[in-house]
Length: 348
Image (cartoon, rainbow, N blue to C red; front, top):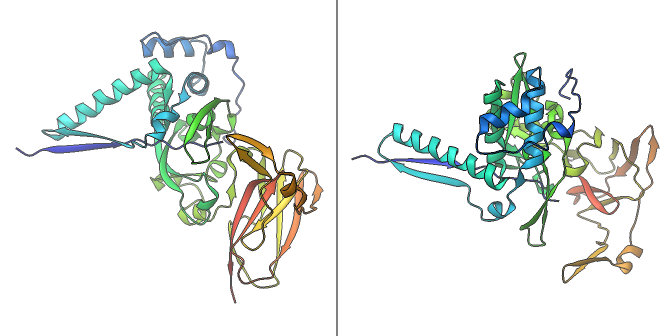
């Protein structure tokens, strides 16, 4: 007898550390924070959406309930188990086993109030379906690290889109729910719940700075493609809602010796200490960790070099002159922390 095998890939990535023409009103926390799941998902959705008059209102209150209730399961992430495999007699049995497994997992997520990104996106889609909101899951690439400049990043994330008036509107319940902390070895060691509305109805030009769908048909009406996504500058995750890069807009710079690179970006907060690091010259790290306790290294602090940008209407500008054909990257630091990174390719 022929055996069939089914494997479900569980997307899990997380950050460690409007939609155009749509008006979104804040929903009072009283509308969702006090509503609990009692074992009946349909009842929960009905309770959450009973005062909602539009699909958008339903979609938002469900989104806020999930991001407020479900925490990121960083312990499951650390186990690095990304696939669930089934052995079955035929395709129909495989399909049923997959359905049964997903139903069981959703109940576990609701009971434990923990999930990785697969769980966030699957739960959101199910709750939207009950509410009559057209919703899909998007699997795709994300950029979470400075090393991802010039690359696709990693294919290890899932988010959602709701369809309203025949248009896709994007959201990421996982990253909107908060952020993870991590150890020096890269292992996650905690989750901090902090709602981030940047990932609710994120315009595609904003979301595409660090999200790219595996199914490129979802970008049929967008200028974005894999090449442009690869070339995005690195922007540190917590700064994404605050920064708008003006120039250079590509993260991969083709330069010649003596070229002047003009950096310009809009930033909604003030920057007291602005610095540049390259592969040729770096400021020493000012943080020292001893037995898990982080302190400032006064000696390293005294060796820091800063740049003085011009600032006008929230736009910071400065220049960098290429003086060596060995230059490979430029990092821009705010308050001694890496925020932006560009790759440099020297041409003749």
